[in-house]
View 1 (cartoon, rainbow, N blue to C red):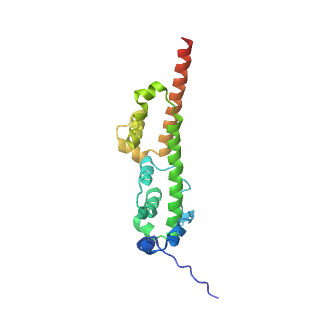
View 2 (view 1 turned 60 degrees about the horizontal axis):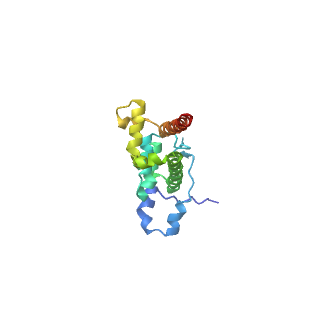
View 3 (view 1 turned 135 degrees about the vertical axis):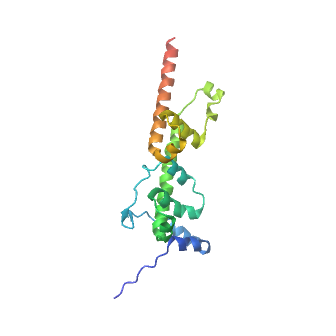
Length: 187
């Protein structure tokens, strides 16, 4: 008895016909799980080793087709052609996993901002308006490390290093504030 070969659908084919598919068909790929290998090579199990610039690229994905193509290009170093030839179950599972990973990392960075508490004087002086976004993070790290080239930070520094530095800086600022309060109380 011959086993029927499972029909596969490449990512390119899926993206080409996606507009014609039922909502149920499109939703079915959202449940796909990440595979551990692709073309015999192990895939990353987390995004902790990617550079800060790569993390930003993942965060800036806008279109549905980018969601299926860009993650494997950015994180695994695959070409667009390799990704488009891959079975949709592979790229969909990877897409789903990347979405979860980016949410996890975004929450970590958001939590850093939430750990800072400001005095009424600092708020009145406008401390909450000192959010310079991504460039501010890159600039701050570059200054901290004596790096002149901001592109170097984006291309060569893992996001976890930047995160840890920001976390330590927040802890030092919190300590300094506590110390200042204790010194002020003694006077």
